[in-house]
Every structure is written in C-alpha cells, then in structure tokens.
Length: 135
Image (cartoon, rainbow, N blue to C red; front, side, top):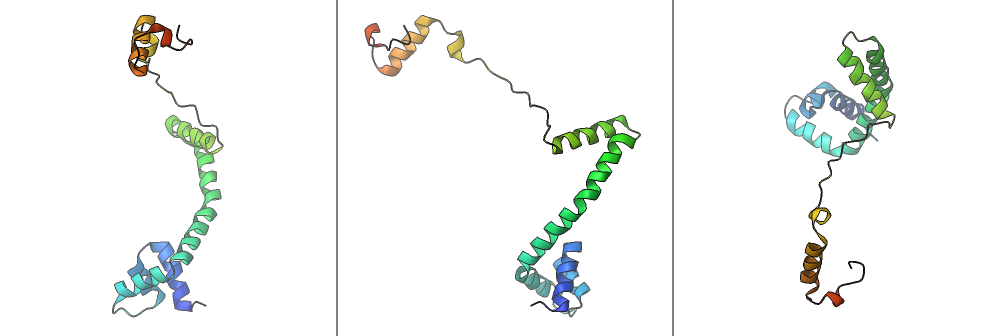
C-alpha cells in the first residue's frame, strides 16, 4: 500500500522524468531530495513503468488525430505527404525496401572455372569424381 506522498511522487516523476524534482513536488523534505528521489524511483520502478505506458497509450488517439489532420490540412505539401506516409506505415502498408542484388562470381564464371573450383573444394582432380549435378 502506497502513501499519498508516494503516489504524488510516482505521478510527478512520470510528468517530469526527474526524481529529485518529483520528490520535492510530492512534499518530501528539501534535505536529501536527490537521495530520496533515487530511492523512491527504484522502489516504485514497476509502478512508474506501468504508469508511463498507460500515459503513452492514452496519448495515442490524440496523436493519430493530429497526424490525420496534418495529412489533409497542412499548408506544406511535404508535411501532408509525410503524414500520409506515416498513416500508411502504421496501418502496415509500408513500401517495400529496395534491395540491391550483387551478381556472385558463380553467375559470371565459365563452366570450366566452376569445375576447377569444385575440384579444389572436393580435393579431387578427376572429372569422374565430380557430382553429376555439375556435369
């Protein structure tokens, strides 16, 4: 069970991100605020993490609304395009990334060169010992 001061600390820390400032805002003694803030931050680490996740989740609808407004109402064409891309990306419709494919030496080597390389890898110089797949 948390005290009112501890609750205020958790709330203040989530708003400021500063443990000493949050301890002061919660009403703890001004003497040793850094130490008290550090101790409280560690003690309520899980609660702080949960509260911050909740705060972020609560902010999502407003953020999406803002992005949607920008996609249709921004004066800058670049801002509208960026917002539209962001919406599509969040919907799982991200454009495919360009993949540069390099031609391996195998595709440009002659059959004889490949056979010699295979012979070296297999440790044989007799063509009849090379697997049929290459012949």
